[in-house]
Image (tube, rainbow, N blue to C red):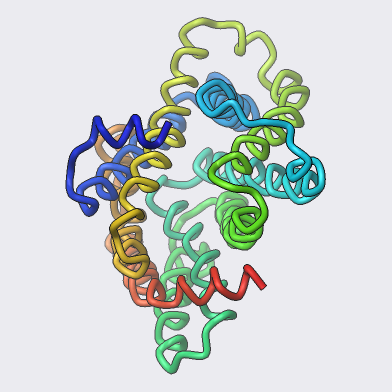
Length: 291
């Protein structure tokens, strides 16, 4: 599937990553606009569920002995993937999109700090800590404390996702591991999503919108990043991904009309700079996680 999509996007790898970032954040903004109608549990069910269906149809993963032997790992991967998305939606239900994405980035940053022995690690951690401090209600920013906690929970699950993704990649070839993990995530979300969203899941307009969110937030970004990473250095990819929080703030403003204070903007920039600096340690994360 990735090779087919690559033929449609004959663009430089940097452009592909920037398109992936824009697609992700626009998808998140549209997802937030649906939350009043369907709730976080219903929204994450549609995103993960539709993504799982698309992956299973296009990739057609096989139930091989390798999959069977490592299925416990894939179950864990699927649960972490779905909980990461659920925590994020619970966060943006309560706080602005740009702030939620910035706080979520502290997950990979924290993992980079733990896995690296570089002398500059303290600087990136300090920058991220300043950003988080500026965004907490205790510092004077009027944010929903529960929303901040959910965003930090999403950060934790993102760090876990990175670790498990590396481990799955070592035992399952290609994207088959992601296919099965996405399916696992969708299965446990079905009863929870149906119980909380109810009849909203039967509305064609919401189902179509949820399918669009799955395409924008999962399928397009994943495909574009996979294509770009074939020729793009991992450290440069990490620096480009540090634009995510600022891109989310722009998407929140354009799609949702969310306005941020100067303090919030400074905080988002601080976390983005920390993410750009820590990106040089991403290879260390992958290597350590694979051991």
